[in-house]
Each structure stands twice: as C-alpha cells, then as structure tokens.
Image (cartoon, rainbow, N blue to C red; front, side):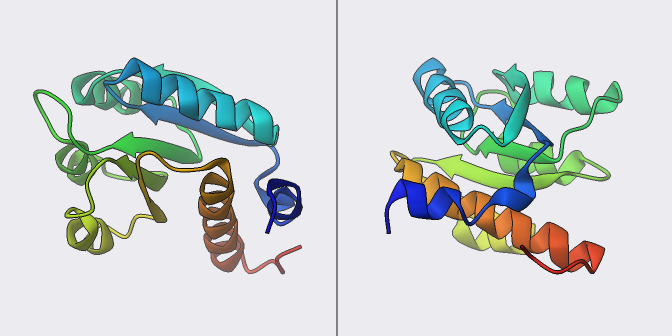
Length: 141
C-alpha cells in the first residue's frame, strides 16, 4: 500500500493537535517532517526531555496525540507517561523493541520502532483515529 493510499485512510485525524517529545534532534525533525507531509495534524510543541514534557502537560496545554520517545535522560518516556493524570493518545517512538510489554500495559495507541517509514507513521495515525472514533461512538470515515 502506498503512502497516498494510506493518507486517504486517516481523514479522521484532521484538525487534531500533536506534540513531539524526543531528546534526539534528528528524530524530532523526522517526525515534524512526517506531520507536515500528512497535513492533517497541527504540531503544537516539540519537547526535548521528560521534565519539559511534565512541565508542558502540568501547565495546562494539551494535545490530542503525543509522539513519545522512551529513552531519555532524567526520566524515561514511560515513567513520564505514568505520571500524567490524563495522557493524550500516545504513539511511542523508540529504537528498541523491548519496551512493548510496558507500552501495552500503559495502553499506548501504537509503537513505532526507529527508523520507521512514512507509511508506518500513517498506520499509527490510523490506529489513533480508530481509537478516538471508538471512544466517541461516531462511525469511522
């Protein structure tokens, strides 16, 4: 399935907000590029550490989707996620497959192993769209 085919599957994420939390600049730039290519999400913040992420979410600004790296200094992305009282839909982005069980327990929407393709990114957005529509009771377009 091509990227064009997949992008037609995610119209329901149109207008949703997102944030990137990753301590690696290249990974942040890659995600920001994918978000721009997709065109349906609004990138609200790019955060470079878990403590900055905690500050962001405790100060009130919220997003619909958080692209979250796992391995970061000070506090892992998973530990930060455990501290959030009402986390958004989370798509984990990590270079390691061994965090999948913890991710499953934390009910993340998807788990992207770096480096991931644009097509795989779109599949993760589709999963978020399905979750949001299931929660709202509206039919998926």
